[in-house]
Length: 269
Image (tube, rainbow, N blue to C red):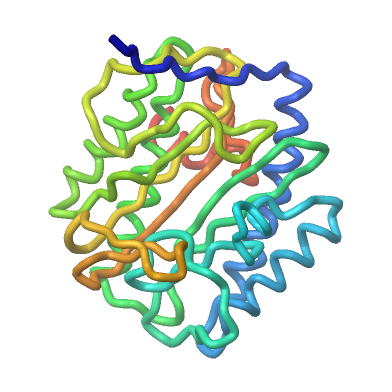
């Protein structure tokens, strides 16, 4: 009889978390630049160039570039593309699009990983709400990431909020993860499920939480490029992500410029 392997979660010292904060800040600043650069007529490769230059200019290394052969510094996923979109000079943004930008950086051997979804020009209320629901669900998940909680308490908080907002498709098979000296580490963090399962969260653990929410079905398919994941029904999808550390004082969001203070205050954290 085989038993399921218990995930091994890397523990960090306070000093190591400070190094992860350096990587997280660089990712956060890079995403701020990219948000400002998103507009009609820009290509996803233009955004990739901005990201790589900013990361390298500030002493970082792009986490994604070369990762299992991935060619870009960012994942740039437009409209029905959920995650892992390859930056291309032929992918030109137009008014009414949305683009999910996933970015990672390594500083002194430690990783930061974060994602945002940005409207291109003007978008309708349905898409604006999709972005709002997805981002807010992320912060509900982060708020649940406290010392003594169980791993799926975060999953349940994400799903519960999304379900309360409408009939959205919550992507399965892709989700959050441990992070530290590697970008993807144990454990996997689903964006759905019952609370009270999985490892107990402890001070010194670090995770990346990343809900992906579709306007239509939750069903996905990977394209022939071996990377890009899209919705099967062509409905638009949003993706937000932050890296955080479990601390005795609550979740510390390492890729948020203010470490999450504004959002936690908004949610009563």
